[in-house]
Length: 227
Image (spheres, rainbow, N blue to C red):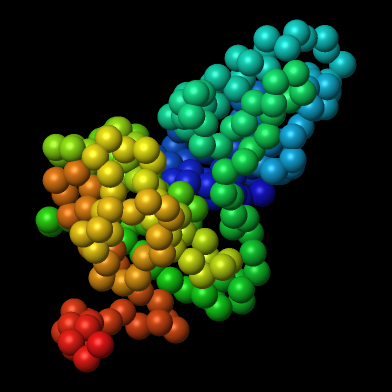
Protein backbone atom coordinates (compact mmCIF):
# COMPACT_ATOMS: atom_id res chain seq x y z
CA UNK A 1 0.00 0.00 0.00
CA UNK A 2 1.37 3.39 -1.05
CA UNK A 3 -0.78 6.39 -0.16
CA UNK A 4 -0.19 10.11 -0.56
CA UNK A 5 -1.86 12.69 1.68
CA UNK A 6 -0.85 16.33 1.92
CA UNK A 7 2.95 16.44 1.50
CA UNK A 8 3.33 12.89 2.89
CA UNK A 9 3.65 9.41 1.37
CA UNK A 10 3.18 6.21 3.38
CA UNK A 11 4.60 2.97 1.96
CA UNK A 12 3.51 -0.07 3.95
CA UNK A 13 5.84 -2.39 1.99
CA UNK A 14 9.02 -0.49 2.85
CA UNK A 15 7.51 0.78 6.14
CA UNK A 16 8.44 4.37 5.33
CA UNK A 17 6.76 7.70 5.99
CA UNK A 18 8.19 10.42 3.76
CA UNK A 19 7.60 14.14 3.40
CA UNK A 20 8.69 14.87 -0.15
CA UNK A 21 12.24 13.38 -0.18
CA UNK A 22 12.73 13.41 3.61
CA UNK A 23 12.08 10.22 5.56
CA UNK A 24 10.29 10.81 8.86
CA UNK A 25 10.86 8.46 11.79
CA UNK A 26 7.73 6.85 13.22
CA UNK A 27 7.88 4.09 15.85
CA UNK A 28 6.71 0.66 14.55
CA UNK A 29 3.36 0.49 16.34
CA UNK A 30 2.56 4.12 15.53
CA UNK A 31 3.31 3.30 11.88
CA UNK A 32 0.97 0.28 12.08
CA UNK A 33 -1.78 2.47 13.52
CA UNK A 34 -1.40 5.07 10.78
CA UNK A 35 -1.60 2.33 8.11
CA UNK A 36 -4.77 0.90 9.66
CA UNK A 37 -6.46 4.31 9.72
CA UNK A 38 -5.44 4.95 6.10
CA UNK A 39 -6.64 1.51 5.05
CA UNK A 40 -10.08 2.06 6.65
CA UNK A 41 -10.47 5.75 5.78
CA UNK A 42 -12.76 7.62 6.25
CA UNK A 43 -14.46 5.16 8.60
CA UNK A 44 -13.97 5.31 12.34
CA UNK A 45 -11.93 2.38 13.68
CA UNK A 46 -13.00 1.51 17.21
CA UNK A 47 -10.52 1.06 20.00
CA UNK A 48 -11.26 -2.66 20.44
CA UNK A 49 -10.25 -3.41 16.84
CA UNK A 50 -7.13 -1.27 17.13
CA UNK A 51 -6.10 -3.06 20.31
CA UNK A 52 -6.59 -6.44 18.62
CA UNK A 53 -4.61 -5.54 15.50
CA UNK A 54 -1.75 -3.66 17.16
CA UNK A 55 -1.38 -5.73 20.36
CA UNK A 56 -2.74 -9.21 19.54
CA UNK A 57 -3.11 -11.47 22.59
CA UNK A 58 -1.88 -8.67 24.85
CA UNK A 59 -3.94 -6.54 27.22
CA UNK A 60 -3.14 -2.83 27.14
CA UNK A 61 -4.99 0.24 28.37
CA UNK A 62 -6.45 2.96 26.12
CA UNK A 63 -3.63 5.27 27.16
CA UNK A 64 -1.31 3.30 24.89
CA UNK A 65 -3.41 4.30 21.87
CA UNK A 66 -3.25 7.93 22.97
CA UNK A 67 0.54 7.71 23.01
CA UNK A 68 0.62 6.31 19.46
CA UNK A 69 -1.77 8.98 18.19
CA UNK A 70 0.48 11.62 19.76
CA UNK A 71 3.52 10.15 17.97
CA UNK A 72 1.67 10.20 14.64
CA UNK A 73 0.58 13.81 15.11
CA UNK A 74 4.12 14.91 15.96
CA UNK A 75 5.43 13.18 12.85
CA UNK A 76 2.78 14.92 10.72
CA UNK A 77 3.29 18.29 12.49
CA UNK A 78 -0.40 18.22 13.32
CA UNK A 79 -2.09 20.31 16.00
CA UNK A 80 -4.51 18.17 18.04
CA UNK A 81 -6.82 21.18 18.44
CA UNK A 82 -6.98 21.71 14.65
CA UNK A 83 -6.29 18.26 13.16
CA UNK A 84 -5.80 17.93 9.42
CA UNK A 85 -5.61 14.15 9.16
CA UNK A 86 -6.40 12.26 12.38
CA UNK A 87 -9.84 12.66 13.94
CA UNK A 88 -10.55 11.58 17.51
CA UNK A 89 -14.06 10.20 18.07
CA UNK A 90 -14.28 10.39 21.84
CA UNK A 91 -15.30 7.17 23.53
CA UNK A 92 -15.19 5.20 20.26
CA UNK A 93 -11.91 5.40 18.35
CA UNK A 94 -10.07 7.25 15.59
CA UNK A 95 -10.40 7.97 11.88
CA UNK A 96 -8.29 9.32 9.06
CA UNK A 97 -10.34 12.05 7.44
CA UNK A 98 -7.96 14.04 5.25
CA UNK A 99 -7.72 13.75 1.47
CA UNK A 100 -5.66 10.69 0.54
CA UNK A 101 -4.88 8.99 -2.77
CA UNK A 102 -3.66 5.49 -3.61
CA UNK A 103 -0.47 5.60 -5.65
CA UNK A 104 -0.60 1.94 -6.71
CA UNK A 105 -2.91 2.62 -9.64
CA UNK A 106 -2.44 1.03 -13.09
CA UNK A 107 0.24 2.69 -15.21
CA UNK A 108 -2.28 3.38 -17.98
CA UNK A 109 -4.48 5.38 -15.63
CA UNK A 110 -1.47 7.35 -14.41
CA UNK A 111 -0.51 8.19 -18.01
CA UNK A 112 -4.04 9.32 -18.80
CA UNK A 113 -3.77 12.42 -16.65
CA UNK A 114 -0.13 13.57 -16.46
CA UNK A 115 0.12 17.01 -14.90
CA UNK A 116 2.58 19.15 -12.95
CA UNK A 117 1.79 22.04 -10.65
CA UNK A 118 4.08 24.50 -8.93
CA UNK A 119 4.30 27.96 -7.36
CA UNK A 120 6.83 30.61 -8.31
CA UNK A 121 7.97 33.26 -5.83
CA UNK A 122 10.92 35.53 -6.62
CA UNK A 123 13.62 33.11 -7.75
CA UNK A 124 12.14 30.11 -5.92
CA UNK A 125 10.01 27.28 -7.26
CA UNK A 126 7.76 25.16 -5.02
CA UNK A 127 6.55 21.89 -6.61
CA UNK A 128 2.99 20.99 -5.55
CA UNK A 129 1.96 17.41 -4.86
CA UNK A 130 -1.30 15.47 -4.92
CA UNK A 131 -3.52 16.27 -1.94
CA UNK A 132 -3.04 19.18 0.45
CA UNK A 133 -0.15 21.63 0.04
CA UNK A 134 0.07 23.98 3.02
CA UNK A 135 1.50 27.48 2.59
CA UNK A 136 2.77 29.21 5.72
CA UNK A 137 5.53 30.54 7.94
CA UNK A 138 6.00 27.20 9.73
CA UNK A 139 9.14 25.49 8.32
CA UNK A 140 7.13 22.24 8.27
CA UNK A 141 4.85 23.66 5.55
CA UNK A 142 5.30 22.36 2.02
CA UNK A 143 5.49 25.97 0.81
CA UNK A 144 7.51 27.83 3.44
CA UNK A 145 7.29 31.63 3.34
CA UNK A 146 9.24 33.34 6.11
CA UNK A 147 7.98 36.83 5.25
CA UNK A 148 5.88 39.59 6.81
CA UNK A 149 2.16 38.97 7.27
CA UNK A 150 2.22 35.20 6.75
CA UNK A 151 0.53 32.99 9.38
CA UNK A 152 2.11 29.72 10.50
CA UNK A 153 -0.41 27.77 8.42
CA UNK A 154 -1.84 30.42 6.15
CA UNK A 155 -3.48 28.79 3.12
CA UNK A 156 -3.92 25.47 1.35
CA UNK A 157 -3.77 24.36 -2.27
CA UNK A 158 -5.61 21.07 -2.75
CA UNK A 159 -4.86 19.01 -5.86
CA UNK A 160 -7.24 16.18 -6.79
CA UNK A 161 -6.23 14.40 -9.99
CA UNK A 162 -9.27 12.12 -9.87
CA UNK A 163 -11.60 15.10 -10.36
CA UNK A 164 -9.03 17.21 -12.25
CA UNK A 165 -9.39 20.08 -9.78
CA UNK A 166 -6.94 22.46 -8.10
CA UNK A 167 -8.37 24.73 -5.40
CA UNK A 168 -7.11 27.40 -2.99
CA UNK A 169 -8.57 28.14 0.42
CA UNK A 170 -7.60 30.21 3.44
CA UNK A 171 -6.81 28.54 6.79
CA UNK A 172 -8.21 31.26 9.06
CA UNK A 173 -5.07 33.33 8.53
CA UNK A 174 -4.62 36.66 10.27
CA UNK A 175 -4.25 38.75 7.12
CA UNK A 176 -6.29 36.74 4.62
CA UNK A 177 -5.47 35.07 1.32
CA UNK A 178 -5.85 36.86 -2.01
CA UNK A 179 -6.45 35.47 -5.49
CA UNK A 180 -6.04 37.85 -8.44
CA UNK A 181 -5.71 40.56 -5.73
CA UNK A 182 -9.19 39.87 -4.28
CA UNK A 183 -9.53 38.33 -0.82
CA UNK A 184 -11.08 34.87 -0.95
CA UNK A 185 -13.95 33.93 1.37
CA UNK A 186 -14.33 30.30 0.31
CA UNK A 187 -12.48 27.67 -1.68
CA UNK A 188 -11.56 29.00 -5.13
CA UNK A 189 -10.39 27.10 -8.24
CA UNK A 190 -6.94 27.90 -9.63
CA UNK A 191 -5.89 28.24 -13.25
CA UNK A 192 -2.46 28.55 -14.77
CA UNK A 193 -0.90 31.98 -14.22
CA UNK A 194 -3.08 33.00 -11.25
CA UNK A 195 -1.51 35.40 -8.74
CA UNK A 196 -1.88 34.41 -5.07
CA UNK A 197 -1.30 36.95 -2.31
CA UNK A 198 0.01 35.56 1.00
CA UNK A 199 1.00 38.33 3.41
CA UNK A 200 3.58 40.49 1.64
CA UNK A 201 4.41 37.72 -0.87
CA UNK A 202 2.86 37.30 -4.31
CA UNK A 203 3.13 33.85 -5.83
CA UNK A 204 2.26 32.71 -9.32
CA UNK A 205 0.49 29.37 -9.78
CA UNK A 206 1.70 27.32 -12.75
CA UNK A 207 0.19 24.24 -14.35
CA UNK A 208 1.33 21.98 -17.16
CA UNK A 209 -0.30 18.86 -18.59
CA UNK A 210 -0.19 17.04 -21.89
CA UNK A 211 -3.86 17.63 -22.59
CA UNK A 212 -3.83 21.24 -21.33
CA UNK A 213 -0.70 23.04 -22.55
CA UNK A 214 0.43 25.94 -20.40
CA UNK A 215 -0.67 29.31 -21.80
CA UNK A 216 1.85 32.07 -22.23
CA UNK A 217 1.32 35.37 -20.47
CA UNK A 218 0.96 37.12 -23.84
CA UNK A 219 -1.95 34.87 -24.82
CA UNK A 220 -3.61 35.41 -21.44
CA UNK A 221 -3.33 39.19 -21.84
CA UNK A 222 -4.82 39.04 -25.32
CA UNK A 223 -7.74 37.01 -24.02
CA UNK A 224 -8.43 39.55 -21.28
CA UNK A 225 -8.32 42.43 -23.78
CA UNK A 226 -10.76 40.66 -26.11
CA UNK A 227 -13.16 39.96 -23.26
